[in-house]
Length: 266
Image 1 (cartoon, helix red, strand yellow):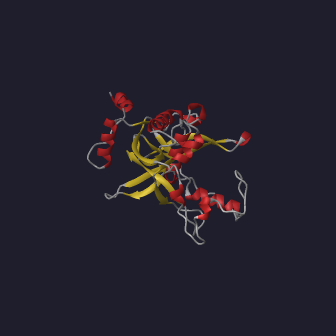
Image 2 (spheres, rainbow, N blue to C red):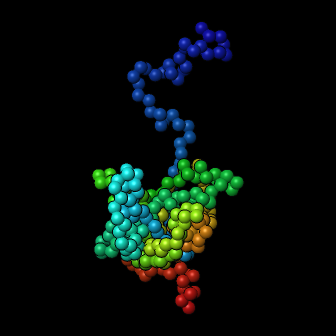
Image 3 (cartoon, rainbow, N blue to C red):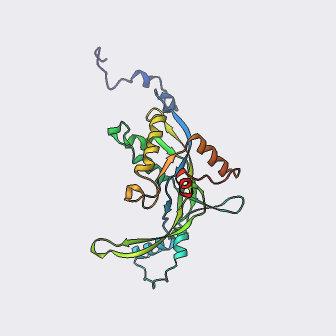
C-alpha cells in the first residue's frame, strides 16, 4: 500500500478503477472546455481589378514530362486565347448556361492570415487553426491521366473575365527574358465568403479587422499589393453593398459598381 500523499504505480487511479475491461470511452464527453465554433457570411468587394493565373493543363503536363525525363516534343505555337482561358478557375455553368469562375479558397485564407501577427495580439498560427472557409471542391484536369486534382474554390461574382496583356520577365538571375503574359481579369468583382471560426480563439471584431486590413495590405491574385502591385484589393462590404450583391447574385439586381468606378464614369 502506498504512503499517504504518494501514488503506487501498481494501483489503478480512481478514474481508471471505474472502467471495466473492454469499456468504450466517449472522449468527447471528457472535454472540460469544448471549442465554440460560430459561423459567418460576408461579401468581399473588389476595389481594383482581380487577375487570376491558374496552372494550365499544358504547363503541368510539360512539368511532368520534364520530371519523368520523357522525350521533349517540339514547342507549340503560342496561343494567347488558350493562355487566357487556362488562367481562369472554371467552376462549370449556372442554370442559365453562363460560365462560372472561382478563386482558390486557400488564397483567400492566406490573404486574411497575412494581416495576423502576435504583435497585434492575433497570432497567425492561432488564426490558421481557428478559421475555416467554405469552398466548392472543383475537379480540374491533372497532368497525369488517371490522377485526381480537387481544388477548393470560392465563386467570383461580377462581370465576365477579360483578357489582359502584361509584360513579364521569366527565368532567374541573369537568365531572365522578357515575355508577354495573357491572363484573365475581373474588373468588377466580389466574393460571397462563408465559414466558421473558433470564438474562444478569435473574436468577430478581430476577424472583421483582419479581413478589412488584408484587403489593402495583401490583396488577392496576381500583382497584388503584397507582390509590389496594385491589383486584387478589396474591402468588407457594408450592409448596403451586401444587399446589392445579394440581389445581383440571385438575378434580382444589376451589377453593383464600386464607388471608384462610379466616380471615374462621371
